[in-house]
Length: 217
Image 1 (tube, rainbow, N blue to C red):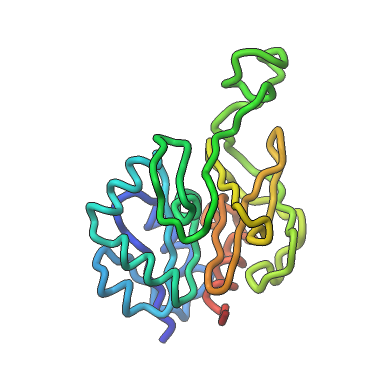
Image 2 (spheres, rainbow, N blue to C red):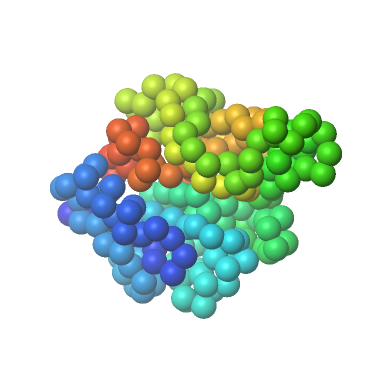
């Protein structure tokens, strides 16, 4: 049986992810896991997250699941979602907190005169709101098994004020544009991680989850 652990450390939309996975892969054994041993025993892991980065990192540490996530990142298929993707990087501007450092890079806030949070620049009515919320196209910058059956420039659903900027551009497998281009999907070895929410992204999101369940890196 293909056992999929959804990491429950108290800061994520775990039930929405579980429902989407069940719809995409009814043959899989999907479990919301709050114990390290259950994550260690799973064949693959989904690492979601939402909320402020300082709260997410503090809650992850308090849960006792930090090392289980790091172990999973070293040796089994792992899918990071939203803040779960951001947490895989070295550090975040949000609260200036260190993250898991699985990937070298920094999590940055949308900044510049094109955004509504800017003090000056374009007229306020022309500025883009932060957080970025809604449907946006994703350009696939290189092929990957998790893009199978998903057309380039497909729309996915985003809710975020920050995005990951990898030190190594080769990690990027997808970009989107909101005032400026930003990395929205990264991959290396057994890890694939996205800034958008597949569980809120209709058929393309379900296809990505199905691809993850079938993926053998």
